[in-house]
Image (cartoon, rainbow over all chains, first blue to last red; front, side, top):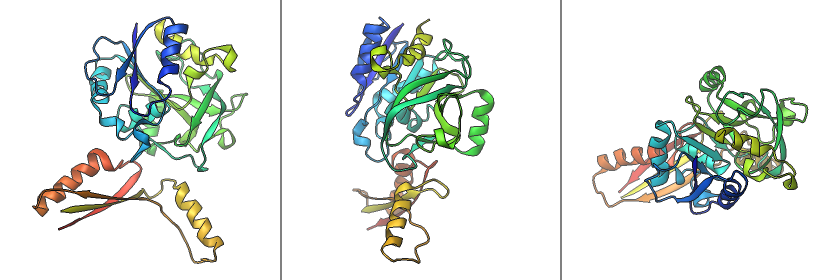
Length: 226
Length: 80
C-alpha cells in the first residue's frame, strides 16, 4: 500500500505523519504538494493537521479548492482511501468529501490534551483492529473542532454507522462533561457513506509509540494496511 | 465595481465570539443587549461594469468559496 501525505502552505503535522508511515508502519510514502493533481499512484492520501493557508476565511476553506483537493474527489470516487486529521478533517468537510462542518470550540479556547474516545463502528477499514465501544486515548489540539451537522443528516449518518469516534471519559461515558469542544453528539470522527474517507479531530499520528503516552493511534493506521 | 459581503453565523449555530462580546457589553452597563453576532465583512473589487453580471458572480463567489451555507448566512450588495 502506497501512501501520500498532503502538504499545503501551513500544514504542520505533515512530517509527523510521514515519519509514522515510513518508520513505524514501514510503508512506502511520499509528500504530495497541494498544486499536484496526478495522484493515481497512491492507495491512500493522508491530509494532515496544521493551519493550511493560515485558516483564512474558514479553517480548510482555501485548501478545499486547490488542485490536490480537487483530485482527491475523483480519487475517493474510485474507492481509494483518504484520511483527514484535524485541519485535514476541516479540509475534507469544506471540500464536501465528508458531511458537516467544524465550528470554533464552544468555550472559545484552544484545547490541547489527551482525550478518551469511544469506538462506535469497528466495521470500517480504519477501525477493524479495534472493537465496538472500546475506549482509546489520543491527543487533541484544536481551536475549531466543534463538529456540526444538521439534524436530518446526523440521523442518516447514525443509521448508516458513519459516526466512528465519540469523545468520552476513561470508562466510555459519553456526555456533556466528556465533550471537549461542543461537538454535536460528542462526535470526534466520521466516515463518508462509502467508508473510504475518514475524518477525525484527534491526532493518531501523535500516538504511535508508548514513549509519547499512547500508541492507540497505531491501531487506526494498522487497520488500513492489514 | 465593488461587492460587499456581510457574513455571520447562521441562526441556531453557536457563536462563541458573539456570546463573549455580548457578556462584555453587558458588563460595561449596556443592560439592554439581547444578543450579539460576530461575522465577517469582505470587499471584492471587480473589473466588470455590468451590475446584473456582478450579482450573479457574487452569488457564485459566495457559494464556491466565501460562505459555508451549513454554518453561515450572508448578504451582499454591489456598489458602482
